[in-house]
Image (cartoon, rainbow, N blue to C red; front, top):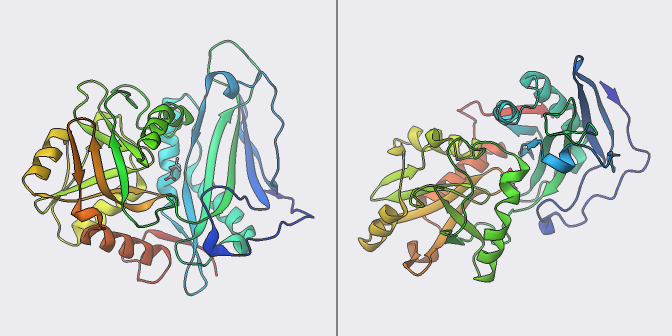
Length: 356
Ligand code: COI
């Protein structure tokens, strides 16, 4: 792989405890190209900077794009770790397949990611709750206005030192149950990580902000009844001792890697976890009966995010666990991040060492 290092390294953040999410980028980026008939080629790490795009580039017109989100951590013993990177690239291929984008080689992408992270290792912050967020993405670049799949793509990875996704950090967030707009339907693209899913969520997100809520909770697009996911996270409920998260079988929900890890971890603790359909009525009934014990979101960016309040429009406002973080949410956050920051033994084999 060609590597061209920058002559003008940027200043690193002076105070890591002030890092926000996604505002600052490192010195280098990775690019690989796909050309029909040739496959993926010309992988390279080059100085971070703007790229040139033809105004007719297909991504700008028909949105053929997929992306991932993963993190590199500086472990307490100085090792640099990635968390389940092969899962991200496998999921990228699921998105690719749905959006008619050529598949990538998972192992090669993990290796390229490790190389980029090694080059950028001095950018990985060590303050509590910080990490280096990695954003792999693919988009069609050929100049063409007919509606078809691209013949020429860019795969890129950029890196950003980040703090907590929500300014609330681990303080519970307030979520608005969305009944007007829908995010995805069966047969659509809900299970993929494509920009369009996020573009379609903005309107609801801004209306929720106006009501003083951080995110929306999406309901299914047909009956407007079954819970799907929160804007940037999967969602879990603890009802009368049982942990429930919406099933992925509908194809309208993103299969989160933190979701998967949380399920595996909860099961390893002997906790009952169900992946099934769960309606907003079931949640409201559990709330009325005093059995809605905890609600939390999971995501790479957000890690574990406790939910302190659910607002179901004119039906009901549900204050959960007195607006405080629940026992399971806290334990999951502590246990997952202990593995990610190398503070606890990784008995699941989830971390991949990049370098020391
Ligand atoms: C992530 O959790 O990595 C995400 O991709 C969510 C997001 C910031 C869009």
